[in-house]
Image (cartoon, rainbow, N blue to C red):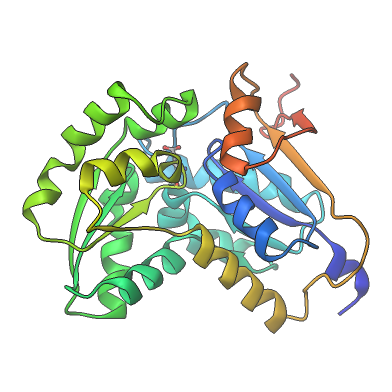
Length: 274
Ligand code: DGL
């Protein structure tokens, strides 16, 4: 493997800023890696759109990142992972990593009662991607799912704690109280920001699982397997591209990432001049 390939950046995309929860874990596990992030903020949310549209958007995102010379693509969006991983993997010559497999693996390891709740966008829940992945891990796992579409705008808006987010969480999560689950999968990369609120509503006895940490482990495993790990000593580069920039982005994104975002560039990925 040439050094150029090893030092090439990892490309990460999400519909918005939720994927930064995955970037945060990549940075903490693989601090030497260069990263290029694309948030398709002009077209967020993906979770309420048809699979056909989400697949088309995902390919636009992937092509933009590939044009930047990435060595691996991370689909840091559950909605896109649920419907577009097969076609992205077919089209691209680089490794493609999604977030659903790693999240399901973690939930399968953690559950003792084998009764697992999954929350996600309408599109992710409709795809049954988590249910299939969990049942493939262990056929005796029972899966209870619910779409929570309002969690995405709440997270994008920065309304992650307080009365409003709690009321909405109570409404969405009420059915899980009767299912006797011991694990709840946060099947959307936006949801980890609402973790304290979701935990408060569900109670301390329920383990919340998000896929960010497991996805970072999977990225490391694949990079090692392919001889692509960056072991150079230069300062890592981070670039953030968005298809639209809102006033709240910088402050909210900083919270997702856990550090201030300096270099944001607005891009057009559909071929039309801005
Ligand atoms: N963050 C995305 C996910 O993990 C979805 C948010 C959306 O665009 O609806 O599913």
